[in-house]
Length: 112
Length: 115
Image 1 (cartoon, rainbow over the protein chains, first blue to last red):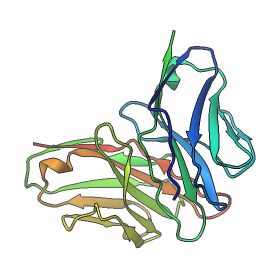
Image 2 (image 1 turned 45 degrees about the vertical axis):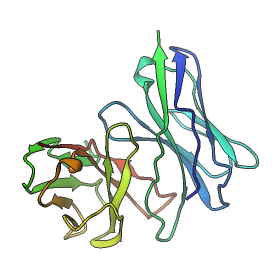
Image 3 (image 1 turned 120 degrees about the horizontal axis):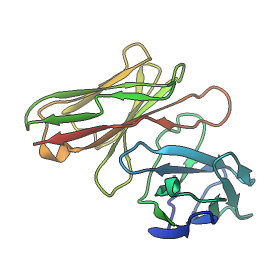
Image 4 (image 1 turned 180 degrees about the horizontal axis):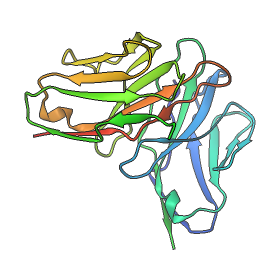
């Protein structure tokens, strides 16, 4: 699976949009981009995934560049409860493809 | 709650003792994964099952570790002769390879402390 690069930490004011970047310049055509987050002492929580089109769900939006070498997770109106470590993962889907390979993620701190 | 559940949530043991953790996946999910997470690091893959078959094991899974999923439903992870280096959060995730893109959903984890 392709490696990803994320900034180690970011701050965001409550109520503002949080834009978390991820570089995955070696991504292959059959690899999806997944985002998870982990709030302190809890298990990782699935947020969203995409292949090449932009995606939106009730939690966030995922913007993938046309060349697929980078993406941005957008939390439109961050709250204090969004303070967490956010992981960007690229992964082949299908067949015997299995594990998620986590990096160290981006620690997002939402402040008043 | 129909999510992934793990028991116990916390375990403290003495070095050399055996411990066993249980994971109950989301109903009808055919894949079940185990990960380990140490402080300040992201989760690391240990092993996974498709139904009752164990299809992949990480090199992290030493001979002291064994995992089972006897009927393709719940799974257990046993650590024999625990060492202080085994102290970590043990996470379970499940997924379905049925329709759509496979997505893993995680449980709350079991935090192990070996004294």
